[in-house]
Length: 241
Image (cartoon, rainbow, N blue to C red; front, side):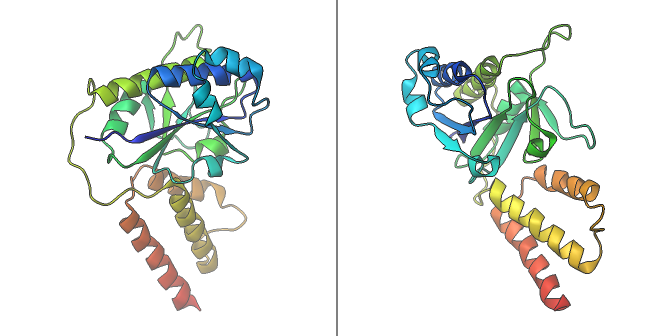
């Protein structure tokens, strides 16, 4: 059974050595798609030095100026976070559970795993792009984990799932899952319709939109299902006109 395509996304990495170490970790575990969102220093000789033979991963890395661009085409997005969201709880898995879930996705799926800044991780707004948060349990008295080390842990679990050590075989669905950008389009469409109908308070939309975003993020919408929802919203707009 084919395994989903994995994309490692590093957001605003400040130390080029961490990018090189991440590339090395990825190549160890047969991953080769590295996306960098606004890296502070890249390309850089320290990244090449730390890659230690994984220079090809660096050479083919995709540099993006926004997170949405880095996630384009992905059906599932996991965000590595040492903390839960402050306002609304988001679904959360540890690294092994995440890999096991990835193994149940259709083989043609594209999956992104996000890793944030060395000092502050991912922002709440960036975490909202994620279907699920990914947590690596650590020593509660010393929980700080280097971003490249975190990528090594997650890459290992994904590799083991690919080998079939943890993955359970499931029936494949013929209809592919909706991508992150398609889901974002649905949420924007929904917000527009709710504003036009008066259901959404334009002065206080945040909490409701976050709850709806969480609902759709965890639902694993298929493309056909998303198109049905977009069609319903379009019908409402036509009726209003």
